[in-house]
Length: 191
Image (cartoon, rainbow, N blue to C red; front, side, top):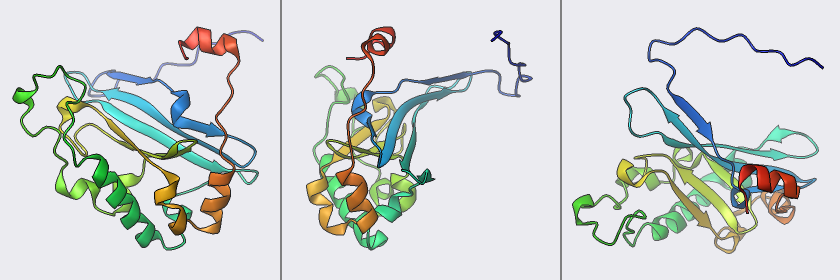
């Protein structure tokens, strides 16, 4: 098959910018029951500074249907409340965002924005089912200061199990860590 160059789209009004993804094995699962991933994404327009976001999907197999977060819970609002409480616990202790110990200049950069952890489906739309728990991704400035970048929280299934729907139970029970051939690991710098 001959390599073909795809036609280049005309530049937008904001220029080309930057778009990059870097899949991480720990943020994925794949089996004959479910494929789920939370992928760190950089979307940066020229002149912009904050660009860390997430792309995510959870697909039920063999149907191939995307699974919205609410369908994991038997009572979506009750499940979201439990998820919000568990997530809030993660942010209850200020972190240093990975900066050196002298973070006084960040002020309250790690204090959550009040509404960003409310039990609203829009706040938790970027999620993945992994071996370690339900992983939620928050973009730049969504929960904490953009200076901290994107945030990710892993909520153990033990805190959510009683709220899961039959579909949620089946998908969680079917989670497997994806297997990548060694050549893929070497080529993409994965461990």
